[in-house]
Structures are given as structure tokens and as C-alpha cells.
Length: 141
Image (cartoon, rainbow, N blue to C red):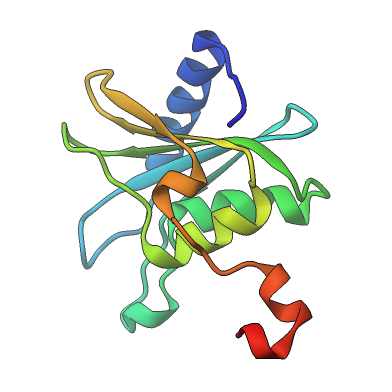
């Protein structure tokens, strides 16, 4: 897991909180923001964007990661997630799988309002996750 300074953690959490204001959540009313620190040290933000047919809803974490990738930064060093309220909001399973592909050693920061946060690695969030190594041998799938 990457070592990130406390100042960088605070900056990423602030950017994730800022991203929440663009959240489109008319169905769940759960506003989530995310901020990615790219390997190039640039910050990319994302918010959750819901759709009436929930299956095409996009989570904040994936929006932030995809913003980084579409800007030419496919490797991330840290990801901060911010949800309204005092409860921590952990990434869903789909987001955990995407995070694992683009952030093998990234620090995952999960924050709540009021300054509370925890840090985790993707291995802690997604133990024994599916990886591209499984695709090298069809018998392993």
C-alpha cells in the first residue's frame, strides 16, 4: 500500500466532498463523491450518477477512475471516497473490481463527514479478487 501524507489525505477527502455536490441521486438520495490521485500526482474527481434503471447507474469511484484513465492516467496512487453523514460508505463490488485493476498498491481512503476516515488496501477490500492473471490459462477460470 502506498504511503500518503496526512495533508494529501485531507486534500483528497476535501476534493471528494466537493465532488458530491454534482451527484445526481434522485432515487437513493445518497450523494457520494470520489477523488483519485493519479500516478502523475493530478487529482480526478467523480460523483455518483443514478438512472431510473439502476443497472446503468455509475458510482463515484468508477467515474473518478474513468476520468483519470480517459485523461491518460491509467495508474492511481490513492482513491478517496466521501459520503454524506457520519457513516462510512464502502465501495460496492463492481467498484472494488475496477479499483483492483487500476490500483494494485493504492491507498483507499473512506471518509465520512466530521473528519472520520479509514484507510484500506484493495486486498483488504477485495480479498482473492479476479485478476488478468487468471486469463492466461483458461483452465484457471
